[in-house]
Image 1: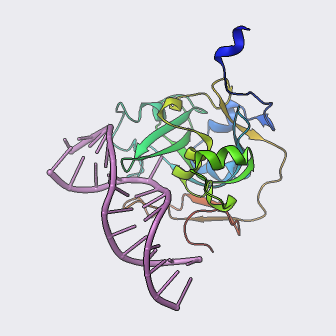
Image 2 (image 1 turned 45 degrees about the vertical axis):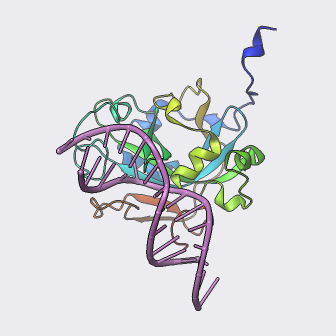
Image 3 (image 1 turned 90 degrees about the vertical axis):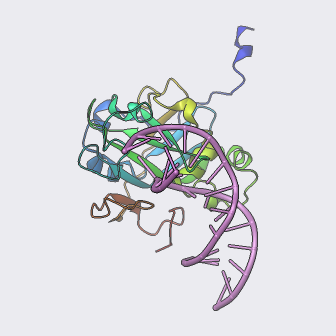
Length: 208
DNA sequence: CGGGCGATACCCT
DNA sequence: GGGTATCGCCCGA
């Protein structure tokens, strides 16, 4: 019984993993195509992506990478398809997928999920919050629901060998996508790089 | 459903 | 030392 050291159950991915070239494009191009894809954990938790924001190094004053590479943002300058996880407001983790190519510092922040699977695990991770709607509505809520922290900074979402992956489960793309300014920033408001599924109850911010 | 407010620790100037 | 890619709780409607 040498497998006793791994306590976490591993389930089959509920979809097929995306390939590297999907992420190797400019973030504002990748972002809307991530809607209706699935962010999944190997322990069975999964949610459909319904809201994202693109951040682009060098030209985007709202991006963490705007002023160049630092210890905190190093992952964003790495290979596309990896996960950049950062800590904010003294208590919250948020996750992005790195886009374009190495050295660019661009990526897509995942802002909200519609819970699909492992909902009881999500509820436990979210201190028993009852409403499914509130489990993953917001970038820090979804990381908490899926168990994502700084430990996952830099993991490969394409190979999926480190516990998390982004999948295509065959769901059709959204019928309608809303683009607008990003949330929670003071600069870069002229870029319409927030994208969400029109009419989704699982999107953060004021309901449309 | 939406606004106001406090909590919190790390990064970078 | 200032600012932060936020959240939960409270309140009123």
